Figure 1: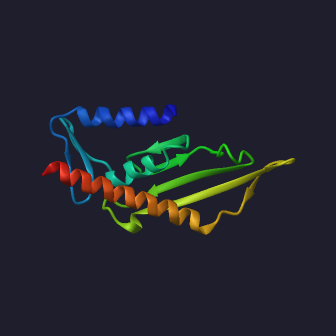
Figure 2: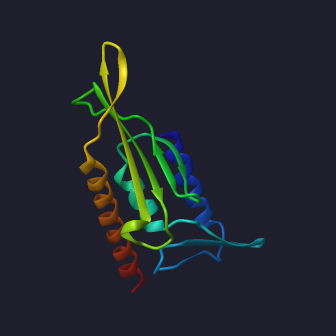
Length: 148
């Protein structure tokens, strides 16, 4: 939770820090202008925010908005404490595209010997990807509607 707070605060501060901020509506790229120059984040902001929104229930281990990598910590659902999941999301493009995101899901089960790697249903990453892409499209439509 602490990592999420730090990341969100840094993004908000960066967005508020300069009157030269801009967002490219086609790519969702976020640019921050400063006296030193113009810096563009390396990932699509809609995919970035949609990924964080979709994984809000999982604790974050690491989130890099410039490199486009989000890594969660292990998460166990309250109804199944003997199983845990971990997710790594790679945002690969500055454009909002279906192939602009890659997701790796890891699963472990607990037994008397401790935690052991277990097979992940192949549909898990596909469903997660679909949820993120749907949320990213919603965010884009909302931002286009706000600009009108």
